[in-house]
Image (tube, rainbow, N blue to C red; front, side):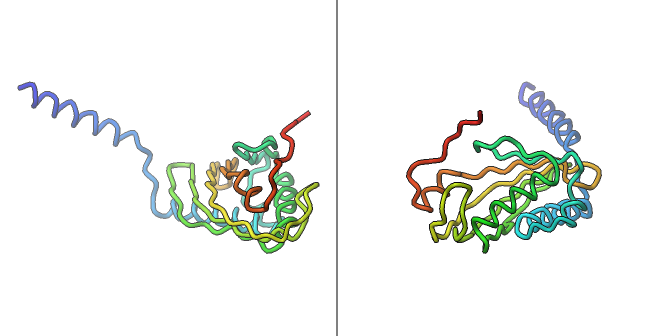
Length: 171
């Protein structure tokens, strides 16, 4: 009798949990994936018109484990992507896989670029950087309202041959 009670309890719990998971239609899933692919295109090209189409006015971009604070607004992401394209003119982010869960899209992507331009105060090294990043995007009313990117900055500097990391002083 004890085993049958446990099975019923487990069954009820499973129904409760499965019922609370937000279902995403195939159409809305493909729309969300297409939106995030356009975001990656903005990073690769700096396309301002596209950025204005896909990001909300109050868009925020968060660089997790990075010395810089979150970037605010569409201009913030355009300025930072320009900074990256100056340092890596041939840079390319490529999405490898995506998972959509409600209004969130998680993307594993690859980056490759050759450091032929300055990275702020750091002179170009001529070395190629390859890495894997995770991008999490929040979609609100058909546009991206916030993104978080997880990138191992130390791996970038190691590949560039830079042994002393830039200051994280944010004064």
